[in-house]
Amino acid sequence: MPATPEIGMVVVQPTAFCNIACTYCYLPDRSNKHVIAQSTVTRLFEEIFASGWSCPELTVVWHAGEPLVVPVAFYEEAFATIERLRPPHLVVKHSFQTNGILIDADWCRLFKQWSVGVGVSLDGPRELHDLYRKTRSGAGTFDKTVAGIRILRANEVPFHVISVLSKASLDMPKELLDFYLSEGIDQVCFNVEESEGDHVSSLFHGPALRQRYAAFLKTFWHEARRNGGVRFVREIDLALPRVFRPEGAPVRNIQVEPLAMLNVDSHGNVSSFSPELLGLKNETYSDYLLGNIHLNSLAEIHQACLASPLYRDICEGVQACSVACDYFSVCGGGAPVNKLFENGSFTGTETSYCTLTQMVPTDLILEAYDRLERRWAEGPADLVSPPLFPSGPTAAQPPRMP
Ligand code: SF4
Image 1 (tube, helix red, strand yellow):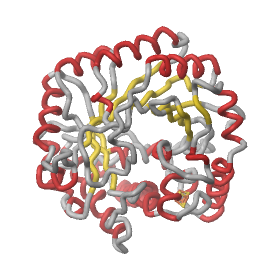
Image 2 (cartoon, rainbow, N blue to C red):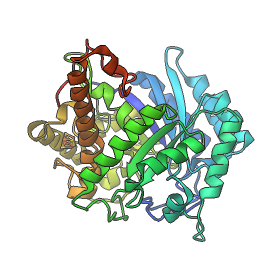
Image 3 (cartoon, rainbow, N blue to C red):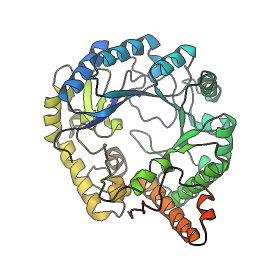
């Protein structure tokens, strides 16, 4: 753990409000239309840049509820402020996670001007997407989201999609791939429907989930690589450098480092660790809040974090993971929020979430690499068939066993 914070990501909730009402949404405050003030953005980034704790490349994620319900003009002003405050040696990269419904040419102009990373929540073809992603009156949102994606493509704005996998879609990897290809979607991320906040997933507690998800991901990964039309599968492509890494290089888990993820709501309240904790209520952990950016310096917030029961219990959970789990070297102790929701405590270890996001991808990568090594012995032509590791291991980077 670094002696001083290394802030890698700032997650800002410009508003808790969302314009739709997905049935699996866990956000408790999604009807609250309060919008963050420009003065809060200014104060936040003055503190971050003055602290000297920012990583050389700082990602700012505008997320939760729906960030595009706040007008383009708001972000133009906020981005200009951050740019004015930014020390010249730092790079700031903005990113949005959106349901895509409000995307138009003005948004595309903003995205392009500031090279914004855009993620669109889209659960696949209509029959999958409209099962859960609904308007406040209960209608499906597929047509509106796909319209947004087509506007992004028409304006040549790069984007990825995040698809929540449900009971039905877990059995449909090829159908999902065909759908992404048909819509020109070449970067995809999967989230399995989780139990978070008030939402209880029926899927997460099924005994066969690990096997079903492994089968899904393996088929999708291999078929996507074979086809070549989808160039980024987050679950594999972000796991590859964690599994194959230089000797002695530690894996960083910013969800367990104090202030490595700085999460700020529309009132300036600050939390750290898993961003999903921000907005949840809890007496023991003071609603997971560490201070308010209008009332406290970042140094004070850091001290509050180090002294908090929240940090103490997260550390205990990481320590338990380091002793108990064969995957610790690629995971670094997991996602505190999922330990809390699934196990009722930060101090435990394994969750369904970490099984799916850490163990399954690691197993699939090592299994494929083993097969590749066996084939390699038979002749170099087999190295590229199929090209499962486009940016991954070479003979000089042996796999690091978890
Ligand atoms: S995979 Fe799960 S049990 Fe293992 S280190 Fe990560 S969170 Fe802990």
